[in-house]
View (cartoon, rainbow, N blue to C red):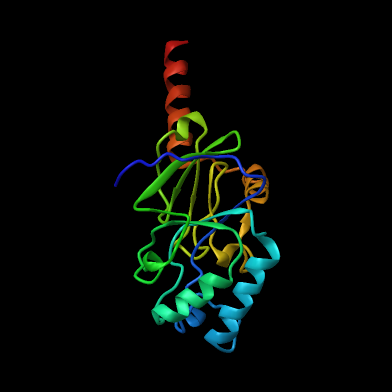
Length: 198
């Protein structure tokens, strides 16, 4: 894995993951309420474009399309609004071939507005800068993991099958009481040391 740093400050930034365009089995695996993969894909395209404008930046944190033809993935991609950036997921054979504004292997360590963020397909228990307030966003888990004050799943299964505006994600974090595990354990150790010194 390499560290990639990109500075960006567009008017609106969105985060998303795990669309699985073209993947029939994701309907059952993730309990998505669609009668067919065609209905699923059309709904997700409409939800994306209802949220994301042509000049908005959108970070896709992996698993864009799976078990479909390259032509299907390209047709879907061409219909989606925004300046699209990809952090590779574990099902990215189709996604890698598409004309993203940028593609990143592993993770991206960047800033969105005033916030340092660590973007990856996978959820980390500990990530660079967590003690300094770095936020961590991921996909892959299809909504299974609980949020913390500094991390959450931005995949479509957690956001009504649409991309999440960065401000919405921040509001969700602020409404969460749980600290990241590493931060909570570090604070507990600091408290124990101070108690022993007193």
